[in-house]
Length: 77
Image (cartoon, rainbow, N blue to C red; front, side, top):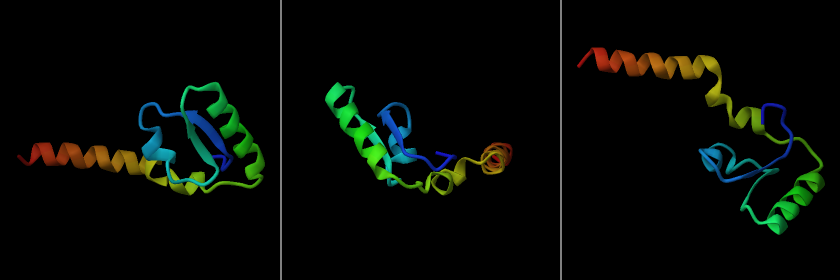
C-alpha cells in the first residue's frame, strides 16, 4: 500500500480494516475464480491508489505515540 499500487489479498488479520476502503485494492475469498477476477480488476485499475495516505495512521511515529499513551494511561491508574 505504501507504494500506491493495487493490492489483491484474502481477508486475513486486519486486512479488511486496513485496505477495505482503498480504491484499487481488492479483498477476495480463497476461490480461484474470485482471485482471478480480483487480479484482473487490479490490472485494469491502471492508476495509483491512495494506499500510502490510507495507512498513514500506521507510521512509526503514530504507533509510538499510541503505545506511549497506553503506558501513560496504565501508570496513572
